[in-house]
Length: 90
Image 1 (cartoon, helix red, strand yellow):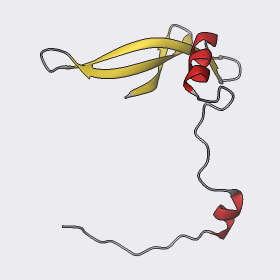
Image 2 (cartoon, rainbow, N blue to C red; image 1 turned 180 degrees about the horizontal axis):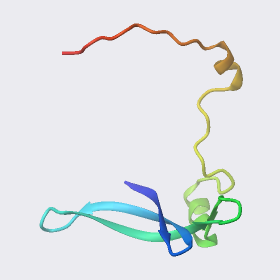
Image 3 (cartoon, rainbow, N blue to C red; image 1 turned 45 degrees about the horizontal axis):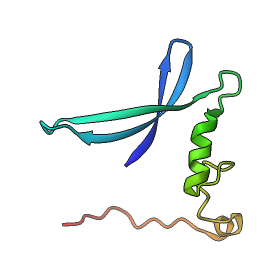
Image 4 (cartoon, helix red, strand yellow; image 1 turned 180 degrees about the vertical axis):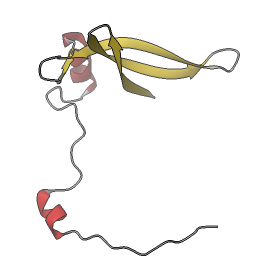
């Protein structure tokens, strides 16, 4: 499973796509490849065009890289919070 990692290098922050695996000795390792950087002025993620093209080929929407919300605004307005106290599972 791959995931994004933000790493600061000097004055810049870069975005890497990391994939975890175990080597022949059973030790956990990572393979990382750079996919973009953080814009220092706005703080927004700026992805490489190659990465966006790959996402487009794989069926992801390049304009919306963040996961979509599961609930609408109306669902949130109608929701309520209930407290049941402490309980333990055995």
